[in-house]
Length: 224
Image (cartoon, rainbow, N blue to C red; front, side, top):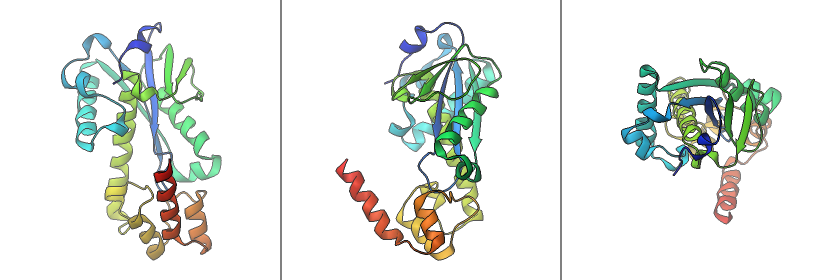
């Protein structure tokens, strides 16, 4: 479980930064920056908040609501940034993720003295940066950012789903699934698909067995 140990070793205003959506075939990459007043973190949020990947959807939504309540009463500051699929295609997913992080910090509403960033690459932000590998499992601030980024991105994809039926974005939120691949096979790609990602690029070229690719991806995941 994450805690505030890393934050306590930092001076001044500390924000956690994380992103969601580097791997999907469609949709934006979304980042969040979160500042938490440690003295005012109470109740369920303190007990439940964790890396968004280990929380259920219901737990993520509950933590998100609690963080938004903290935003309203001043105990939490939140900034959200994103990079669209066309931007991802133009500058690559790593640079787009870092740009989204920088945008999240820029709209935080307060200038942090240091940003704790999940991963090992620092985004271009106007403050000191400490990168933390697997930081969303170690730092409350980064875990909070991971939840905000994940919930925000999932909501974007679910809002797009009725406009682009047949891809299963209601449930797969743009990730590689059999339903998503079937949708690409039947309907082609949308403006929200990442054309630089190999499955989409090959689908556009008409030279991809999507289901063979999915089976290969599942086999590789099972081997890991």
